[in-house]
Every structure is written in C-alpha cells, then in structure tokens.
Image (cartoon, rainbow, N blue to C red; front, side):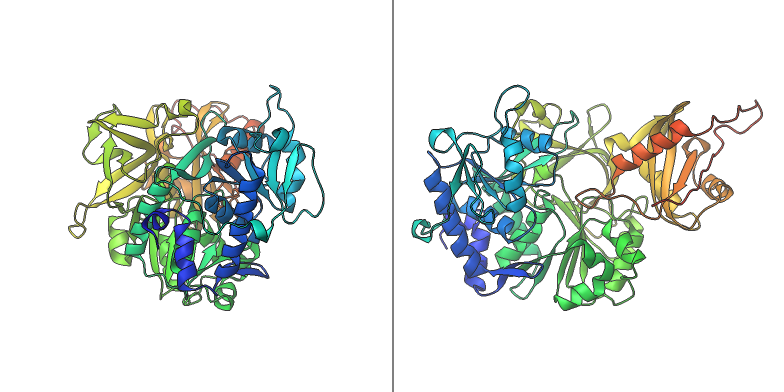
Length: 559
C-alpha cells in the first residue's frame, strides 16, 4: 500500500480489505456488510459527493443512527478526501445546528432519521443565517440519503448513487488534514469542535498496532455512539486488522454471556458504568465471558472492584484501563490490570491510568500554575494533540505555552505513582479539577468520599456531589445497593473521613442514570439532588453542644 494512503485514516480500512476482503466489516442487528461490499459502496458514494458539489466538500456530516449507512457514510466521506462529522439524529435540533455551522458542513450523508430531520435543521436560525454551507448548484445542500426513497426537500440537491461515477480509489489527503471532527461539551454551554488530523490518528493507531495482537478472527464490540471518540478505537482497530465491528444493542446487556458467545466476540470496550449494569443483570458469574481476549474501559474512573469482577467473568481476557480526552486523539494513556499490583498502587480504589503514550511529553501543573513534581493538572504535548478548536476563542485556558511548546491542559488531576517495576512510574487519576470543592472551609476531594462510601456496608456504587442547598453548598450522595440506615453511614464514615468531609444527604437508587455515551449522568443526578433539597424540610437548629454538620439521611428507593 502507498505510504501516503497507509498514513490516512481510511488506510486502516484498506489494510483490512487486503487482509480479509470477505469478512464482515460491520454487523448491526441482522444486517452486515463485507469489506469488499463496503469498499465498493463507499467509492460510489464518494464519487456522488464529489460530482454534486461545486467544489470538493471540505466537511461532510454523517447524520445517521448507528447502522450500515452510518459506517459506510464515514468511509465514503474519508474516501472523498473530506473531514467527517458524525452526528446523531436524536440530538436536539438546536444543538445539531450549532455543530454543523461550526464545522462548516458542505454536504450530508443521511439515513432515514437524518433525512427526516433535515427541514428543521436547514431552516434559518434566529440570526437569519443558514447552518450549512451552500455547496451544490444554485446554493443547494448536497445530500446523499440512500434510504429516503424518492422524497425531496427544498434547498437540497439529492445525490443519487451511481456506480458509473464511482471513484477508482480514495482521494489523497495530507497528514495535517482533519480526518474527523467531534464535539465535546463546552463550559459555555455550546459544543466545542475538536478536529483530529490524519497524522494524529496515524500515530495513535500505530501505537495500538504495536501494543495489541488483533487479527481478522476478532469481533469488536461497538457500544459507543459514533459521535463519541472511543467508537473510533473499536472501528479503526477492527478495520486495521480485517476484523468485524459488531453493534452491541442495549438489550445485549441483559444477557451479556449469551451475546458474547453467540457472536464470538473477542474484544470488548465500554465505559466502566457497563460493569455494574452487567453485574446487576447476572452476567458477571466467574467464567461467564470466557470468549473475550481483550477488555477495555475508558471514559470514567474504573474501580478496582469492578475491574476484578470483570476479570473473573472474562478469565482469558487482558483488561486495560484507557484514558484520554478527545483533544488528544481517543486515548493518551493505558494501564494493564494486574490484580495484586494494580490494587496496591491504586488511589481511592481507582485503577491507575498508566503511562502516557510513546512520542509524547507530559507535565503536572500545581494550583498556582507552577510545574509540580508529583501531583497536579495533567498537561500533554505531542503528535496526538489537536491543533486547536474549530472556534479558536475556545482555545483560551485549554492550551499552555511552556518552554517553547504548546501543551493541552486536560483539566484532570493526577498523581505520579511508582512501584519500582514500571520505568518512570505511572499516573493515578484523582478527578477533575472541579472535583476538589470547598465545604464550610474544608477542601474536599469528592473521589475520596466516593471511595469511602464504596467501603460502607451494603453500598455497591456511590457518587458524591456538591450541591446548592438551603444553607449553602452541601455534600449529597446517591448510591446503589441495599437500603443503608443513616446510623450505618455515620458510624462507618466517621472511621475514615474527617467530620467536615461527611456528606449530609444520602439517597438510594436502583441504578444510576446514564447519558447517551453510557457514562453516569452526573448532571441528571445533580438536578435530582437540588430538586430534593429544595423541597426537603428545613433542618433543625443545632445547639451549641451538638456535633457540627450532623448527617441527615433520606433513604428512598427510586428508579
């Protein structure tokens, strides 16, 4: 394969095509498509995109739910030499409008749901501006929608795929060209666009090829939506090996051992929130997932208990905890789970995030902005770092200039740990910078409280939040497990936490709410806590002799 093609993100697919042309590249429900079929279809679609536009589209949105059209759409946009923007038809229209406008989308590939959403998306905004770039004839938007029948929309130049107009090969791209753009939640309330270049992706996946032994016989889970960067790991690791990417529907969690066995799944990747879910549904019996060879978790803190339980269910699997923000190309650090060693060096019962990927440098910033030796905010510089947000105004505060180099500030607090085994030591995740809060003069580490709560009798999972209550900022806890009396919390936490770090409110849930990326939805928990505090009876007035900050426990099972 040509070196330039090999360095392109879609070069991963072409390599899989060479290795296993008749393997399924993707399976979604009862549908599947082989490498040969996907390649041919993507070339046809890419040719259609290029013919319909007045100029080659710089950015192509794939507005499709997870299905064959979405996967082929991503490949077709890359073959056309465009930047891909995966979008979810189920997202609020106003949010999607902001994203397509920020990315300057000039063409769309849509499934049926995406096609139905287009009229609302294309309407002028409150400022009178249109969200899409007018790239087609007479200022129209080129749209390839293979599943939308013969319907039309005003302002749309409908692309009809035609084999006669297929590209003979993918268009050339440069390493600096953006391969895809993903959007993260911004502190301003508007999504921030993160472009990832072909060069950054090439460095990243080259490291994965060195670290893992994926083959055409592997079947990868696809638990993440395609607008979440971890989905790129599954997809392009699988495609680079000629393996199959298999959509894991929500129902798979109800019978995980059967799902893994029936689909001969060998590689699992999800957020750690999947582990308690599978456990509650009876899927983590010892040896229940023995078909897995690799198990990966990312996106949230992975507890040692969850890692141990998953490892017992998947005894032939190597388990890794991966870490990384979107701005650093999927993941930037990894820790391989070893039960005794990992638990020994863990902080707050959380599996370490390991060492930073090869080819990168990192430093820790102290609270005053100084470089710290052992603990602080993680900053990384190297080939996986994005060149900046689509809106450069978003760069402020996220990038650091130090010693003539640019570093990305992750906003995550980490600690250097060492056990004399790993050269240079590893990193332990302590939480977001905003997970350290001030409560009545106390500097409180929320992850430390979570860890203490998980050690309480009857508690399975716990999330501590700082919330606005009638008397100011207070600590509130949601937990799963058995109904725990207030006295039990007070007695057990008193043994491990200072009184100023003891939460005042506790609510039991049958399960934690999850967001679209299957992470614990802390925003939903916070809103629920503040609503309960707003309607709770006023606390009794303390006497001078009464203990400061007495625990006030409400233990109400809810779903």
